[in-house]
Length: 124
Image 1 (cartoon, rainbow, N blue to C red):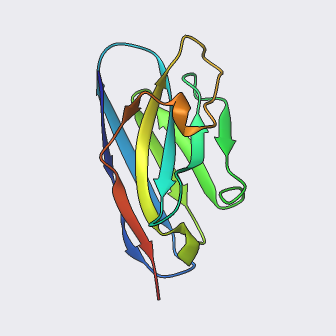
Image 2: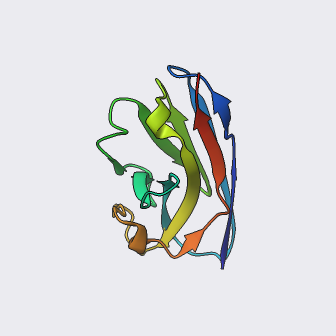
């Protein structure tokens, strides 16, 4: 079991920045990590992911140019800039066990462990 705890969500105005953090604990396994969001009435969307080694990343088209993902061992971060109303969602931290240091998950089904989520609301 890998326990994931998110922090950093909140209410911000369009154009603002927000940083999310995820702290992982539990089993001593290697895993890629990522952020998956879900807005009301919409399907889950993989926003950004990062490999176990930390050098390979994936960003969704909506995140490119605005979001940056990083990690420091068991901690993961998402820097979100120029936030838009359509970024409003619950953001989940997720972990995908893997033996590869370079593989990056790209779909929600890749992940085996999930956090409780943190709400991000972008509104004027």
